[in-house]
Amino acid sequence: MGCCSGRCTLIFLCIFQLMVALERQVFDFLGYQWAPILANFFHIIIVILGLFGTIQYRPRYIVVYAIWTALWVAWNVFIICFYLEVGGLSKESDLLTFNISAHHSWWSEHGPGCVRREMPTPGMRSLDSHSYISVMGCLLEYQYIEVLHSAFQILVALLGFVYACYVVSAFTEEEDSFDFIGGFDPFPLYHVNEKPSHLLLKPMYLST
Image (cartoon, rainbow, N blue to C red; front, side):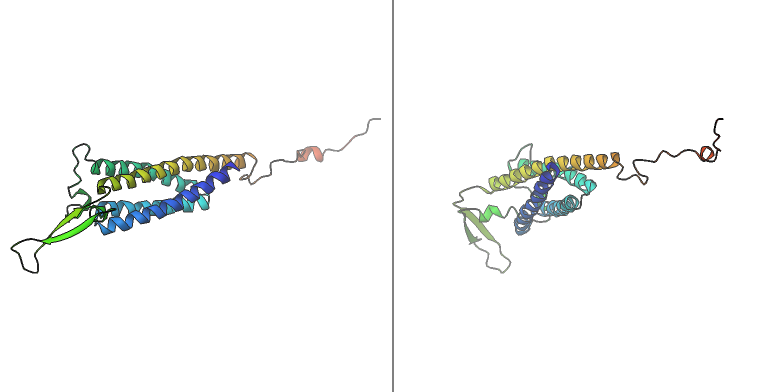
């Protein structure tokens, strides 16, 4: 009963992680954040693998999922440090875009309450001229939105790690008990205690 309960919970967590990861992937695509896009892609693949392993009783796949969740926690801790500018990191750098573009988080211009205004650069009338974008009135700064996203990812990943370890342990115990009762033994557990053939062929003498 405990294994079934833990297994069902892990299946729910994997499905929930997929939904959250897809939501995050959409906003990272909108912001051209290539490093998070790549990390989210691997995360989605491993979560699907963990979901498959949980449904099909494959402990090895669940172990891979558990290891990845630990790495996923570390990645989200790095994202939190990046946006809070901890350890010399700067949220204004192009680290998350691999220095390919100067884009930042999609939430920096589309956060709750943000008013986005484009003001053309004075003295430049060409078609290739760039506009200065001003964002005002945000109820919550974009770096805190990203931090909340990562913190929520860490919480779900930790729950997934705990339940993955529990399910792997339960599966292993079931396999050990199955081996113990002869589930994988090609010979029966109880053998007939047969007499040696030479004793069966030995003639019986009656005492006179």
